[in-house]
Image (cartoon, rainbow, N blue to C red; front, side):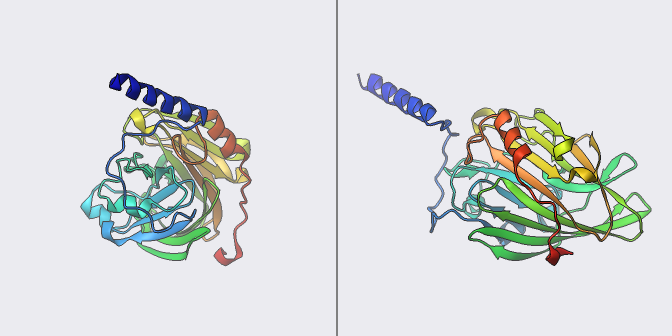
Length: 310
């Protein structure tokens, strides 16, 4: 009788969850320490305890990029952008990382997106001789605003070679307000030689533990490159999208690791693009590829370069 009652309760909970469009969550590990504040928040901070990972998040999505110290600790480490799923509106990334097991679900989100040396969720490189030439991890940072309604920071990437004839370096600003899946990025590339650059902005191909290709949507008229990741056990799916100024597009290509949108860029002249991500089990109610593509395509985004960046 006891087993019958418990089974009935489980079924009722599952039905209630389905009726409210709340998906079943991954297996729960040790819960995180409770937050000091459950107010929805945008946040940016350095994780000096973990090789200078730089974390940023809002109520819908969470990310990190990697510092130079990680290159020696966990080679190969690259300058791609990591994306985490989250299902709470308050800040969780720092507590998740401090758990020592950010890849497990502790009740507020998790990281099962594997950047590796790919571009992840919107990293870039220089496309030359049918190859993407990329920087190493960021070398310096400056946090401009750490919430509560906006995460805003900038990083510098040290000079890197493009074949044997050119060297480039980059300053990039990241801005994420509350209420959106999209981080706004303003990149300024410099070069030791004059002439335009072809910049490849990428989404990594096989970036989850499922090790399968996702589904890709290309809409050049909207400047959209969208990826709906494969089902990954009880972890659900990650979704990534890039939005760029359609007038800058040269081509859309792939290499061994990435789906790439190629832009023509003038050295020293800042340009704007957007990186978006969602978790199929997370905040924002993004449960299907169609919903994600529609959201990413129709988001009202501004590609004007802010005056304080020029």
